[in-house]
Image (cartoon, rainbow, N blue to C red):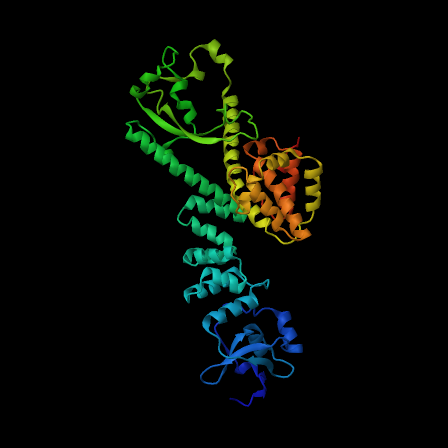
Length: 477
């Protein structure tokens, strides 16, 4: 012990220069914080520093390293700082306490949270216990554990100031340059990264299914092309639209024998009595994805063929759409297909957000107005959900969503014991009823209610995807 220490029971007044800075999950002490240093110099350390003694009898700082460093450099009015001496904690408790002390401070950085979570995991603390003992969201704990496995993503998180959630998404697609480029672009321009990630997952899943179908067709002896070999302008190569030198269509049975013939597998969403995505569909229609084999000729000219719009008949050709019209129609249909895909991906993200949102314990601003409009205004989407005993609502709360679950609805209704909880549960029913009625038709013809709900949930913290913002940008009906 040195003569710079004056004991007062468990509380000591200590020269900060004599304190040993112990291991801490927080690595940045913000030495450039001039206002903080000024406060320490003028008023001293107001919050007690916590330390324990090591085997040599030195005081090792557990909590308050920043206060200690600044006090040693700037000085204090008394030349000392208050130190509470405790028994040396075990390693897990040290990390938990340091995380708990710093986590909710604005300056706590994601990479520091990552380091603390990683250290806890390395000494055997489970993800569930880390979340419980530090009050870090379990999703953030899981994200940290994913990011910790990749040094590249850790560096990227620091360099680009990514959140743990964003860094985990980059880790998910690590090695896929196109995917990570899209994620980086979303971060750069402030677009919701979760939506881009879901679109990438859905596209990968669709491609995997497409490859299986291609392999199946090849096993049957058909010359099916790999999806990466398919040109965007493949529509000009369809055999059903090609003609011979006499401007006649080719018999379907002859297609496999034509020079350069191949099969392209296309994805289509088929609805009851509707086989064209450009045709308006009923909101209740349930679509199914199907893979359609389409015969094409890779080099029509070499096969002596031409497109039907390139007819040798001047009279017939003059009646056909112009190249500009065909390109415009092609671009419009491509946009419809892309927006439909984006909407389906957004639905997954939106419902996951909704699952978390309805677990809130406070009534969001404007909830009562939404409830009043839906109930008193006799919203037909709510009526439909009531008739079906709220299938999506039951699913969001973990109830069986199949069939007519009146028992599940009753349990959900009676589980809320306070007026606040009952209001939130009623709002959840209305939001679920709306969401359950949406589909790819929604972005194309949004109603005033669609816009009303989308504006509301955006105001409550939902990050809408680009296609979802069309609900608020287009004239409503």
